[in-house]
Length: 375
Ligand SMILES: *[C@@H]1O[C@H](CO)[C@@H](O)[C@H](O)[C@H]1NC(C)=O
Ligand SMILES: *[C@@H]1O[C@H](CO)[C@@H](O)[C@H](O)[C@H]1NC(C)=O
Ligand SMILES: *[C@@H]1O[C@H](CO)[C@@H](O)[C@H](O)[C@H]1NC(C)=O
Ligand SMILES: *[C@@H]1O[C@H](CO)[C@@H](O)[C@H](O)[C@H]1NC(C)=O
Ligand SMILES: *[C@@H]1O[C@H](CO)[C@@H](O)[C@H](O)[C@H]1NC(C)=O
Ligand SMILES: *[C@@H]1O[C@H](CO)[C@@H](O)[C@H](O)[C@H]1NC(C)=O
Ligand SMILES: *[C@@H]1O[C@H](CO)[C@@H](O)[C@H](O)[C@H]1NC(C)=O
Ligand SMILES: *[C@@H]1O[C@H](CO)[C@@H](O)[C@H](O)[C@H]1NC(C)=O
Image 1 (cartoon, rainbow, N blue to C red):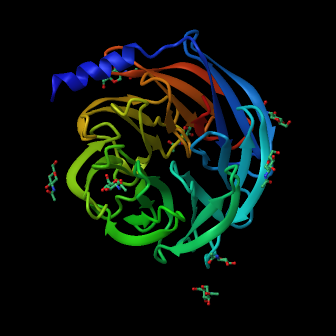
Image 2 (spheres, rainbow, N blue to C red):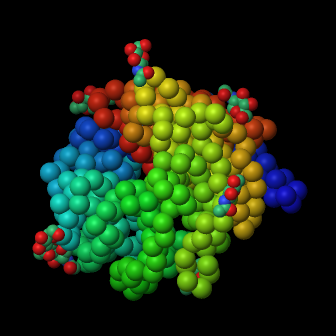
């Protein structure tokens, strides 16, 4: 461990609170609404300030690079589709269009959507369940609104890709194939955004089941949530080929001695400064709690240490998704779909724990899936 990394990490932690208002948008698994929340980072309050009725529940939402558009899965449509909204503000949400997933799949639900951070700002979507080997690459118009499916690509017949992430320069995209226990690498055409298959590698053990992924901006490390193994795995990325390799670096997302089959791990995401990584697990029974964990990172993105593993206040339902704030390493939003709430967690000043500082209940049925920070 290099002391400078830790010192920098804690400095960025301490200088974070600005006394400002921040807005988040939250999607749901069941109700056709998008909710807007406002967080005050000095009073530590969270309030519901918007309830937008739309035509699709979105199991996953993603902001465009400039936050002028929001893309969502259509979880209620009878066949997989993706929805596009224009954002005038966090509460000024305007529905634009819905695009059907292309290709020859009989899956019924779209599960995940990711937006490129670089031109041509293509949007990537996948279905889950049933015959779910298809993926869609969608183009956007000059305002960032979804335009058309420009490529139907395929994984394999047993696939179900639950999460994707691009590297910082958008040259590669990684797909976490939960159903086929596989991690896929595709290269990205920098002119069109279309994908070319590079590699597919099996999860580290049978039933590991990669679910969500994140890439460190330096491009050397890929973090993978192994839903079935209830671990966070660190993969190193070959700089020439983009292919990740497993080097047996894993951290448990449930306490030692816990029964792995009672949990399913969920999400991994980098903090504001990229000095921390957050990850969560969910309990399969609503009688148990899930867990939230954070890791400190070296400047190259390798994991320095697991800082803590704290119980969440509910099972998390099908969520317990974490969304680190874009303005401070201290705050992350956590969503629950068992009860229906969004919480803001704050990293303890010693970095050795985290706790809930604000919460809003949204008990409409189906809330809450994932949250994105608009500001
Ligand atoms: C999307 O909605 C915005 C806001 O109403 C509108 O200005 C724009 O023309 C719409 N674009 C498309 C492609 O529908
Ligand atoms: C994608 O698949 C759909 C049918 O599922 C087809 O209508 C469309 O032309 C395809 N798009 C491309 C770019 O191949
Ligand atoms: C779609 O897939 C099904 C099942 O694999 C196959 O029977 C059918 O011929 C395919 N249709 C097209 C248009 O490729
Ligand atoms: C994009 O990042 C990858 C991984 O860090 C690197 O190998 C590649 O050279 C970069 N490409 C460009 C065009 O910068
Ligand atoms: C991975 O590490 C664990 C202990 O952390 C060890 O038991 C196991 O044998 C290692 N596996 C490989 C393939 O090196
Ligand atoms: C959960 O708790 C309820 C009430 O205490 C009990 O009836 C039920 O069997 C428990 N379920 C599980 C899966 O433990
Ligand atoms: C959080 O985890 C830390 C370290 O693992 C532990 O010391 C602390 O008691 C936990 N706090 C709660 C509220 O569970
Ligand atoms: C959101 O709006 C719907 C329809 O107007 C309403 O039924 C629901 O109770 C509202 N939800 C919340 C949490 O205010």
